[in-house]
Length: 206
Image (cartoon, rainbow, N blue to C red; front, side, top):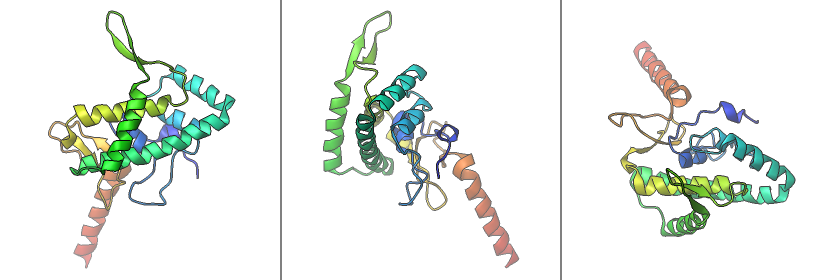
């Protein structure tokens, strides 16, 4: 069953986390995948903070339709990258070390992505991408975001929506006292609260 990608919450707080959270659950192996092709990937990244701009998304969509085989190959790479980033970032959220193999792969992929950046001079210098129309741009953006998260952010604020009631999505907790528990109240928090309430009611009735 296809879902309206634009209606799904982006709750990760970092582009790489929203990219990783493109499955309905990280706990169920048969969970629904929101991305079915390269066009879905572009639509998802268009809706993420720090993701694709509207013009970029339109150009990439047109390029994908003009070069479907190339777009399919990039999409396959995106799925592999999503799995890799989940393994590495989930380990970081638990306070564990990822495998050396995953670190080596991520380091290699990140180096290739960052090699595509160029400095743009001006009153405020900024980074840009050498080819902003490259089909691999969404992957480069996700990798850049993951690198920044791992080396620049407070990893104690990197969390996972918990089992058994949560979906396993990863998010960066920016709450004042770092007390956020769920990916979002609408998606998982309210359901968990309702189930706990029903359980208490049954216990009292019994």
